[in-house]
Image (cartoon, rainbow, N blue to C red; front, top):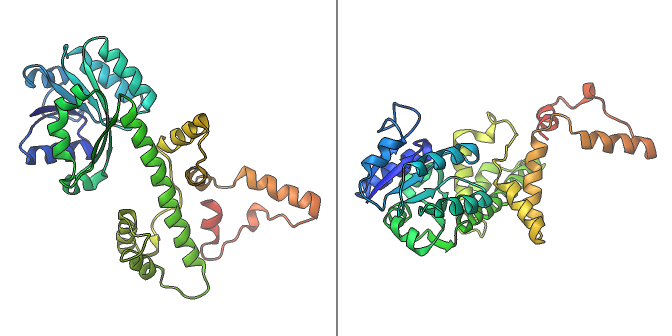
Length: 307
């Protein structure tokens, strides 16, 4: 089929390439004229031909997605379909679906996982929308997902991005469990070959996974991860996952702890730990370490700074 893609960044461009390899025609638009195939969204829609036309947006969540979908919709007509493949909040997806439905335009929210590896490995796709609108884009989903599976029509509009939100929350917990295990191995006074131990886990172990494969790949390129600062940002999905858990009364201790660990990694001096240190001095007379006295032996200063 012929598909319009708005947003030709790392994900969008690789998805376009995978679709073209499968025999589909892609008309791509990006703000960068060097990679864009058309001058604007109006030209993109014009080149898609007859209804039903399908336009896939692959831009950052929030305002960029809001503005992009609004502009795309202005050039579509009844029977066309918009697919949002970004990491949008599912509440926004439900609202956008209702707004487009009032104009006769279909909407599909597609949670996409696979990152830069998706071009060769395929993408995991978690899709929300009506059966009718999903069917319009099904050839695209079939081409993007791995041949052995990876596609699921998980429910109505909003369900796709809700599922991707939970997926990313699980990702937080898995990554942090590996991170804690790595740090404990490195801290042991047994002269453990940590990189070799982690590599061994990839074969026959119950904790083997693609994330573990990627950790070994990172260690091969940078032993001990010496060039990487111990700070990790969150892109929003983890917060949304925890917020939904609170709303629904579902306990998520692992995912919540992984999210808060990312917050602490970005603190130079934790205000909370300052309070703890001050209270220990007040009730127990414990010594308080000043900023100037922070450990500066190998790894010490970095450990304080990085949380």
